[in-house]
Image (cartoon, rainbow, N blue to C red; front, top):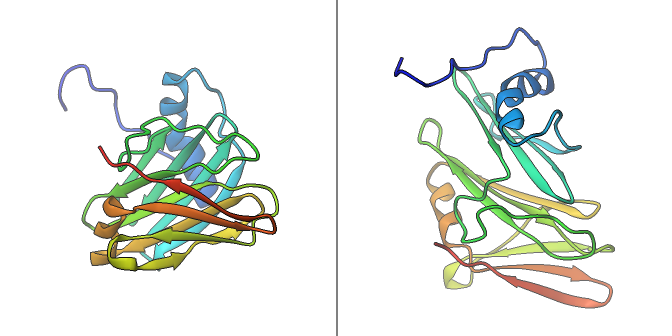
Length: 173
């Protein structure tokens, strides 16, 4: 192990949420936080091989990726966009996108949408549009394998509300 690098956190927890809380503790502490924000989504982008838990509140998010043998935690990061430390104010349309390695390859785009949102569209180059999963004011779209590489090319997020369509252009760094 390289000098100066803290040991990887371990967990004796038996649930994904417990494991994520254990793995996230050192990352949260570095940000001056003591606990995870509320859980917004828990999905399996690669069934049986990869679980993603996304926690968020107004000020930021934490994504916890639990693989068969590996895990990773990202606090407040969006590594596929130019908004590297996004916030999620209520009533607005926001976005964070991230990709994870290659075994298995997976990516997600996540954010908050205006109150009353009925659908969130994720637009990719070439006119490809995919509908995100929506839960209240929050949305999530995941991709795995070859499709996950397209998440670095998302062009915009569109929230469909009773008041009309709200667009958020996505810029990549």
